[in-house]
Image 1 (cartoon, one colour):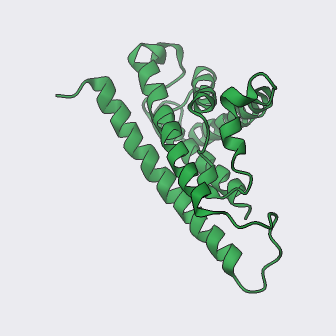
Image 2 (tube, helix red, strand yellow):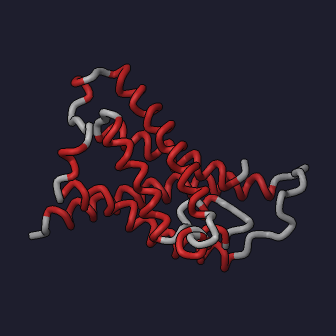
Image 3 (cartoon, helix red, strand yellow):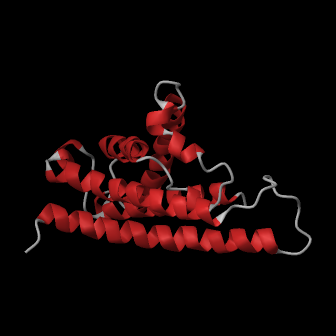
Length: 191
């Protein structure tokens, strides 16, 4: 029998891989179509994205996905949920608040990302946290999760902060995660 923490991590890992492959894969298909269509405008980058870059990004994404999938289950297993505003049933606060909580989570995440991203550009932190992501100079949807595991850990802090401030259900957190991944994939693809 599996340990409850390991079971939760594996379930999160499956879900994260699934929505990452579906979302990034869909944007990758659109990205390819966009680049190969007739009458296209000149690309932002003159050089084509090389298969080696895509392979590197996919391999790098594995570490990020493991961090993203493990972070909250580990914290919750050790009692962090007692310090959150997490609630199990949507009808506790109602549907209007359900949608508001997603918007609030997006605002917190975007603000958190902006400031931590700036911090990771500091010359003493850049090589330890953010250089991996900057290796993708010609971005595509697979660049989205291509970050150092330390950066993935920092990025995961947005979910912790959000859950401490905003009352949210698991469903709202899932919808927020899908929207966030879709936005990042859209941004990385340059569509």
